[in-house]
Image (tube, rainbow, N blue to C red; front, side, top):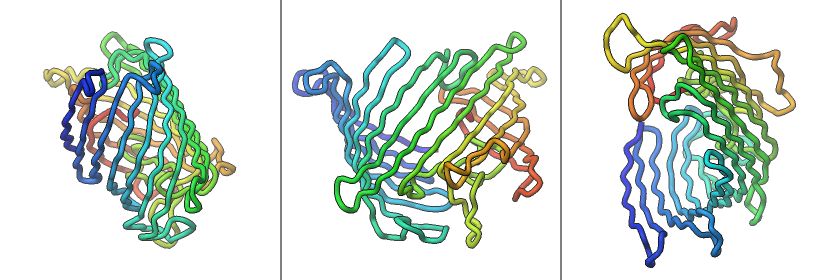
Length: 309
């Protein structure tokens, strides 16, 4: 949950360009962004955005401060698909680390990242916040490359696909797959994590996958795979508009290295939940059972907002 304050000034310099300042405050993140947006990029008809930002984020295994600068260009391919190209440079400082220090993951020792990323998105859902039909696809390639001596280098690829079908007239069946691989000098801030109400509901936040054997905190990994299946129906027993119930199954895992990736060692959970649909996505309470034999918690209750996918 976060609160966002935004001020925007449109039609700068008697053009369609705009300037905006954004402040986001939440329990686990604070972020300030200055953005200059224009429908042209070097006189070419492309939507572009130049940003300067400062952020502070909290995760189960670490906290970090980050300051960055970047430029993004958006190219529409069709009415429902587009490409985003981004060039960013940012400085990161870990202010808390609950796993053993290793490599660039050192407390209060800043490290720099210059990255080039390319994303491709296809949106065919009837409603991105409460979809009942249609599919969605996204993919992202991110390359960290050295500009200065302190910059780190890495390669990261992630893609996801979601599809939604009408089920028994008023019901909806949804499934998704998320998959990623990475290599190089991966900071904990760049690695893959899963676990929690938005990924794998059979474990607590970020706790699916590698755990530090000394501190028992999640370390993340360089590869991951996740499948989500969910059927949602109106809750007819209680006559409240927008109240639904769902049954679900999640399957997946996070692996330390890309070479460790295998479909043989996947965790599975099943469960049910209640949803109350809002314009920002459903308010949800989920009850999940982890079917693994060697897990921290076999039964978990989680509350959140937004879809799991």
